[in-house]
Length: 150
Image (tube, rainbow, N blue to C red; front, side):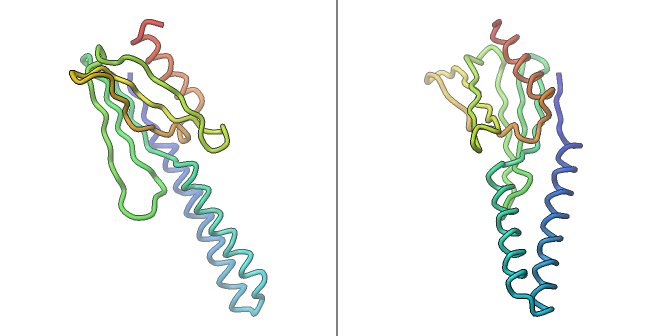
């Protein structure tokens, strides 16, 4: 089973950049027309716009289970600085559990995978599921439940 949210990520990027461009142009044009209050307001909205996308943490996700291995590739789509491309890959028989944690006031879920290693139990860092549709999230959860025989 493969789940890839690349189409949705393209939409998120378009919304982010179009919104940022709109508020930046609005702010600049307001300052040029001498409407400082409106310019500061538009600049403030632009900052909130950036912070909103940073807090939600939309991530590209490729979830793949083939040949007895689970692979999860992900990276933050809207990020200041360099993108960190991450991959989680392990045999499915080492999966012990998973956890869903709520973030951003309980509106977004983060997925945490827990595996058994030779040194004990290990947790992978949280992966934001904000950019996945509800159906894709349910498919991942159902697949993890199937692997854990729940």
